Length: 371
Image (cartoon, rainbow, N blue to C red; front, top):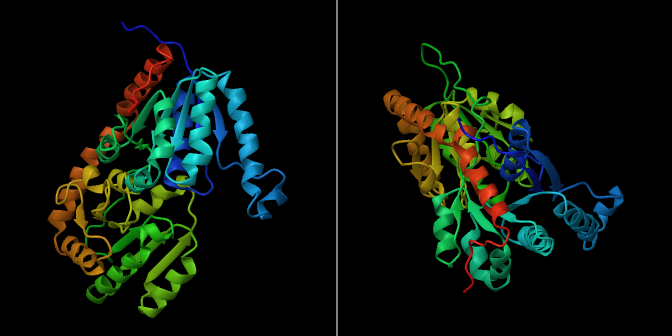
């Protein structure tokens, strides 16, 4: 019989919904899973509402109204918790939120686990490694969700440990299928931002619609490009077959997947997209661009179909291939359901807790060697 380990006190540093982005959803989910096991989680929210509310209108200085309380909370929390778990990304998010958490943790003797995410790591390191590497060296450990990021950081001499993303399989279940033919149902579940290139998905769908006039596309997400994308749908003559849902809470995504046959991931920058894993867990066939970490996540022809970025014709061809081959679609669905089990909490939990306990037991340890 194993020894029951004492609960941990964890400072979770990261964003929370809204908006419901991949990192925010992972942060919220991880908090719930850890608390359900009896661990104490103190949340340090990097996207907390501005206080006072009118400070949000002060462009140029409003960051201070968020940053100063954030750093004060970090300082207090570092004296109470056993470990910081910092959800980190590229760009200003790193400099404003991840780096302060690392240095405050180091000053206060609190181990820091940096959970780096995002598909732009290589570009970020190329531009800013002189500024970023000292903070990475100061962290106790860098964990990443994919072999892609392990490879990227390894090329800069930064050691990492893989701890996969977590998919709550109880929320994503395969939808019922009808006994006969039905209109093709296609889903895009990425926010309406340039890096997700929803325009390519719309152009691909226009080509599919020419072959399957009863097909329907649901675009689930919010963002600054909504008006532009709605205009493109109208210009392509597909507006009546496309539904823009706007922002969808994470808890409601399961139903959207269950009502889809195929999910498109048209992004031009990516790491380990949760939407792809959620689609697989829901028994939905996936057609994705082959950018960044996607080929590390799914295998072309086995768990998904991969196409080049910004290639609507190739994406449409892949969709039509699935529509014309029920056997291939069923094979992808079966393989995807089996594959996604490795991202369930019972599989990820021991890896994450082992990282926590290792850095807590050796507070001076660092897995990122000095150059």
